[in-house]
Length: 79
Image 1 (cartoon, one colour):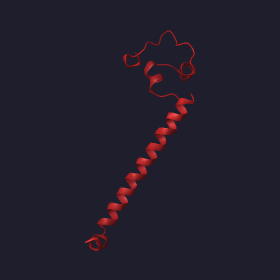
Image 2: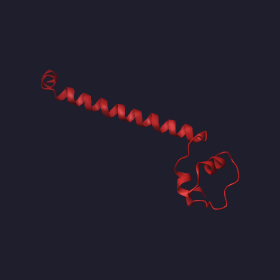
Image 3: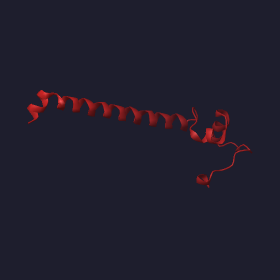
Image 4: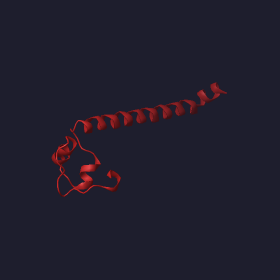
């Protein structure tokens, strides 16, 4: 059965598709963790800054524990 599928090419196509999806999933995981690591160091900011209309500089000062700008109101999820 496997020899028949391998000869017909469908098994090879399935393996290529599976490995492509696996590589894509791995790349997305690496990107996700790299983004989180950079955001944790304050090098980049994620959705919170853009959600509040803050600049990257303001968001970095928040991540460093400085005073929150007056125009930023807490979200319900943050309370």
